Amino acid sequence: MSGMCSPSFILASASPRRRELLRSIGLDFRIIPAHVDEKYLAGESPAQHVRRLSTIKAMAVAQKYQKAWVLGADTIVVIDETILGKPKNKAQAKNMLKKLSGREHKVFTGVTIAHMTLNIYEKKVVQSTVRFKTISTEEMNWYTACDEPYDKAGGYAVQGKGAIFIKSIRGSYSNVIGLPLCEVVELLKKYDVMTLD
Image (cartoon, rainbow, N blue to C red; front, side, top):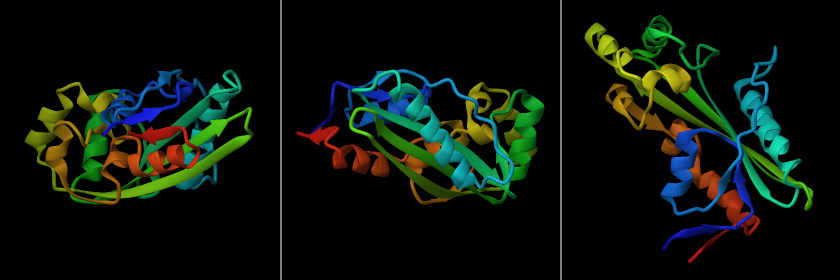
């Protein structure tokens, strides 16, 4: 069985992880990244932040392709009410790993599906909890010497070498990668964007 999508389905993201997740379940789609301001607004909760950004991304592309179904998404890693972005250098990557070491953190993803002509847009927020083991200095040096942490929210990849740090995940695994497939497929099937054959 494979998943098929409407030929007018667009992923409004340049994320290779989201692309790989959708392709892993057999979906066909175009990739048209939405270039939007992703700044955090004062007073915004993590759920509000990802919901707002996923909607802005979806709508930015949907306004240009008004007869297409557009999926927007945004993922953040949160610990101690602080959003951990993508580390820009080794020092930042090590600081993030030190914060995560031996503790739990939350991963939030907002997803929005939009269709301008049909005046449809629906949003969901999915939360997962990840527990890290205590990371040794040797492990931290090894991990930050590779390329993996530097284009990932929180500075690690659950589906890569960063898996060695993870003791447990509560909630969606694919959400931690960057797209909660269960909830996304439910949305796509609800509007007949996706069919199973």
